[in-house]
Image 1 (tube, rainbow over the protein chains, first blue to last red):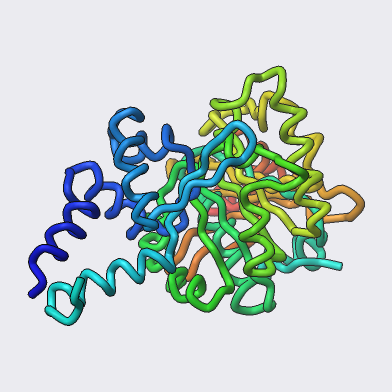
Image 2: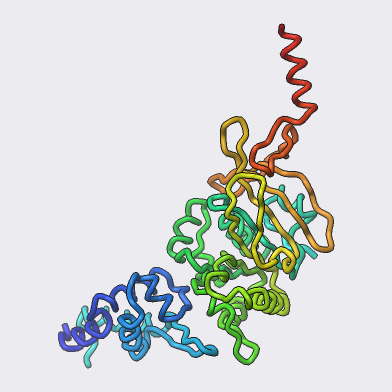
Length: 98
Length: 255
């Protein structure tokens, strides 16, 4: 198993409780297309706490953030999310080198 | 040109279905079956009439919609995977954002070539959009959907569960939409029953009767009209004069 790679990726994905909650929310509800404020409400958190974690997941490519007028709209990037999940599985199985 | 709901009795009441390209409103209090009826319209569209659909929810999470739909035998996830239906969970401010004539949901409408759309529920807009702007924003949204040639269904909550008062919405939405289907709880002989009627269809005749309906394991099932009662919409119906007379006559004969 590639432990460093696995640790890094899992840290980026689910390193905090809020990130784990966000991933769970989007995986169970892939049709969410919403603002940070509303997403925060949907997981019972405060917007400021959620915003930082969303930025990390957007950087990773799992979430997508698009500007519509005055609003930033966040959604799941299903293609990239699938890629990241496959990479995670491969790391767990030891099939991918960094 | 009509967009059938796939519920035979309702389509007969509508004289064939909803008018294509129109915006219809399903209004009713909590638990009357607004979401079920709206979902059934989309599922039947996708499975029976080859018309893909988009379901927009503000409050219900898609996971809840998947679970509840499964109880009626509707596999929403499968329809999503087949590109026939899409469930989008968003909030009212996102829905009314327009940039360079595009709305955030336009991409999804184009992706799945949607012909039907449900917005559940339009009442949530009232909580997010200032009342002075609400009617204008609704008018813009309705026209945007019409320009996309979608046959749209909005749901709206009525706060009156029982009683003789009925306010569809506070912003004159009933004037903006083309068709109104009213769902109501009524008390008949000490039990609560569900009633459905069509209040209006712009540019078309329709059945004016009030019919009983049930939410069954297969979705909405519409039964016979409440022919023996008067004042059903008030929530406290009484037997019609003819029925009361017949009943009294029968009792008299027995004596």
